[in-house]
Length: 436
Image (cartoon, helix red, strand yellow):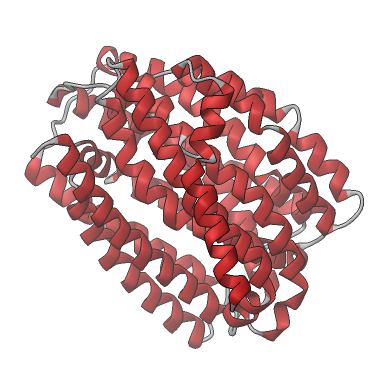
């Protein structure tokens, strides 16, 4: 099958998987808001912040390195697997040590149980993650979709049952662990059957991957703080109940991009990597990718801003009207973030993880200050600070990343993002809405 046909098939199966999983996730949250308190979602937000941060180190950037590097041997795969697995155990021990300090900082004793319990997911993920990456590298998106859909739907059923029977916040914890276990065991079984796994480890075989991966990890760690610093600040200064409402608003706003962008970027990362030696094809296909992402995301977020009161009431019920303004403000933030999301695929294709790392360090100097200033006013101030920062960084991100990797001029990039076709569709839709 040609790369084009594989890419089309990948987009189709990724679309099916992403839509079903997103619907399951929305349905799960919508149902659980009827059973759980806002503070439960606040606690879970703090747990996921800590574990999400540790998860970045567990991967060590090896996923990006595997997708970028061509012609990997079975010996190299084996060394990478055992390095990743061993490091996940080390990270779990670190989590056990740090948990009491986190619980004391936020004055939430229950975190002493929740964080170590959810932390088991790091070790569980290590057993199957590499085999899932290999399936992605081979463009086997039908296989990935089949496993993800099955496990996601079962996790939804488990979470609803646990919430209904009174497990509280542990309905979120146990359903997530169930999903980790089943998914990774399936990918492990499939990987051993198709690829095999040797009991072998040589550090020298992992060094070329770590050179690429370490910059990737560094960039992701810094970016993680940029993206989640609001959770840290809100949890400390506003409490878990307000954090729970904010986090629900953030999840709602992130959901469209989480549905749309992975459909394209999961396929684009391995596909663009195959064009890494052809600058003109890489440039052409990347600009197409950005245009598609912008054309789909911008109208959706405009609609979210307009219909936020209705959307919140349908998904979360009548007790969450206070987060409507947060949804509207954060939609502006996410609109620009969604446009910049494909940069990750370009970084993997070019191997320029060093540029991504330097850019994320630069933004870390700006984002925390903006969010801290916003937090001095209100919870809405935090959202406004995030939105303003994302708008102001749009052109600098082009100059530092895209221009250096592809040589794309600003005018060419803006035309790629905001194409005439996109504007015509927007005007046509506005006219049709006006006639109604």
